[in-house]
Image 1 (cartoon, rainbow, N blue to C red):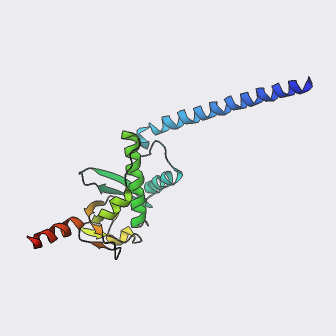
Image 2 (image 1 turned 120 degrees about the vertical axis):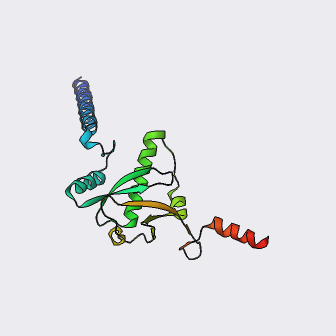
Image 3 (image 1 turned 30 degrees about the vertical axis):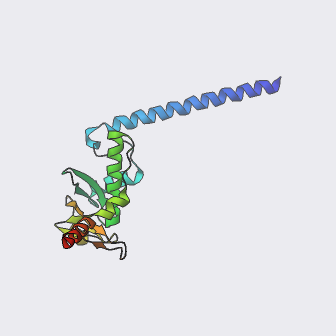
Length: 177
């Protein structure tokens, strides 16, 4: 009999603990939602990661920069990155930002970033940035700079960028005619 009493008491404690944790989570989520609705925090995404919040804080302190990325459809997205960022860091930030935007607008939509980076590169003032390890500031990219996508294809043999395949294909057709 005593064991049944102990078991029911433990079950009650588990239920109370479960409800207590749920109440805390609900309170935390509602507080977080209220904070994110504040116009001052408009640039913070709905599900921020610690690294993204850290970058935004660095942006406010001046040790990060906001880059405007002009897409091929003419729209631009703003991406915050650290001042010491490389092209690879910028690509990862663009990927995260675009994926978050697509997720919030249309649900899950897969973008093949391997295809994107195999067919396009980023450019600043018509200078193509090709090396993933190059520091962006070496190309004159500063806070509020704009980069844009440029069609560019890597050749399979050298793993270096070459002229676009489409142009090579049509160029070969013109020789036959």
